[in-house]
Amino acid sequence: MNPSPSLSLRLAASLALSGAIAAQIPLFTMPSAEVPGISGSQITWTIGGAVPGPFVVLADLSGGPFDLFGERLYLGFGPVLTSLLVSPATTGPTAHTHAVPTVPGMIGMSIFGQPLVLDPLAPNGIFRALNGASTTFHAGGYPVGSSFSDPIGEGFTGTFRADVTGHIRGGAVQRRTHQTIDPQGAPFAAGLANPLHPTGSRVQMVYRTQDVGASGEPELLTAVRWHPYGPIAPGSISNLEMRLGHTDVTPDYTHDPWSALPVNPNSGLDPTFANNYRASAPPVVSYRGSYAINPGLLTASGYLAYPQIVPFAYDGTSSLLLEFLVADDPTNSSMTGATVRLMSLAMPLPGARLWASGTVFQPMPIPNPAQVSSGTPDNAMYELELDFARVQTWAQSPWLDSLNANPDYDPPMVAASTPAGSSLSLSFRGATSMSGAGATAWSASPDIADGMRYLQFRITFVANLLTGESPIVDTVFVPAR
Image (cartoon, rainbow, N blue to C red; front, side, top):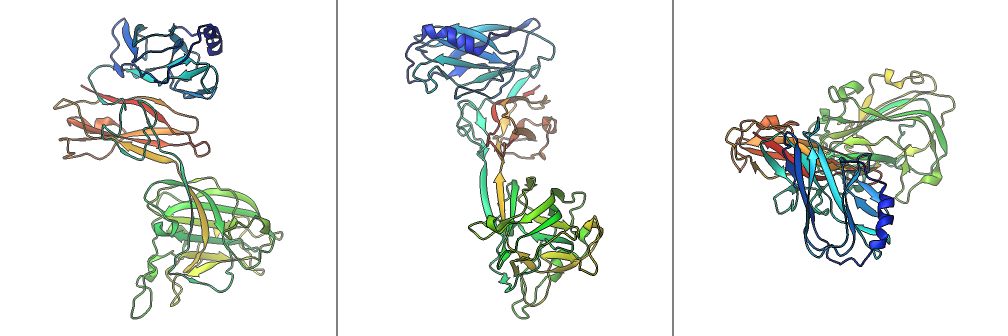
């Protein structure tokens, strides 16, 4: 395939052939999977209905996507962009065969195609794009997978979208705001010292899944706000570090109905800061720098934002650990109290927070408050307002029959369009029956299912947090030999 002239020149040249475009949109198809021959392959693409206007069929080795004049094209528009056909209007279905020479590295390569139909009545006044399709080359064997012509009808489950013809797309980004207010907690009638201590502090806070409104689905924590108590005094902290992580600490705030004491007082935060970290996964730094307390930024819900954090990948199933470190500095000034709820009035435990702070006589170690290894736990739960965004969604196939009693699965073939800032991954498992009997664990490789007739795969989509764009998959196939 030779590189084509620029798209704009082709479209301009086609304007002389313009005509009215019918409301009915014909379906464009390509063979989903092909085995290349020694000298090459023949690919026959079809348009399943009349095209009442001039059109061009473009092809690329990348699925893009690429937006052009308001139309979404599933082509990368790289240096190998080419035209397979430039044609006037047709009165019925169209099929064309193209020779594709065999080249090194062809196995696993995909060719993406899409027609553009000239239409002066289109929203952009020039053309409309038909659906995209692709062909992926493999080394042989029965291809087990899907071309997603009807993913819901095929039995796919998950949080995906099936709104792109012949494709499957990751779900939309979903955002939510949650306030960590447990009705069991008793409001404390005074402003408690907040982590922004002017003489330095090290503070940990733990929030269970129910405290953050988790649903079990992974999310990004994108913002943290705190609830001031009483009038807000302007102030500043010159050196604040915020850390976010998961922890295995899950405080049990249940009380014995007879004694009114917590039934498990040692279930909360340990007095040693490091003991509250998850093994091999300490919290990550989400912010480091200065912080100015500005009363004018108080939200309508009564919260004040901490500095903008680096989004944290929260797994949706673990307790959330927040850690604040403030170095002592004579220029620090922060006198506003924070609103908390006491999770037990009978005793200080179990620990919802772990606190260590300096005084005017003995400030925190400089410049690293992390040198303080232990503190005092208590059950004061800070009222925070948290912003979450779900960017990770998934699609799971039904059990697929390889038609082979003892298959050897090859690496997967995937044809996809991946917008900037998005990604996708695949996992696989095998079974001995269509009902999933003897299912293996999930693995990043289909080799986990070698020797098992039935294969299942799962696509994990990760959308771009800022744009909301999700990956769009045209085909997934695993050759079974």
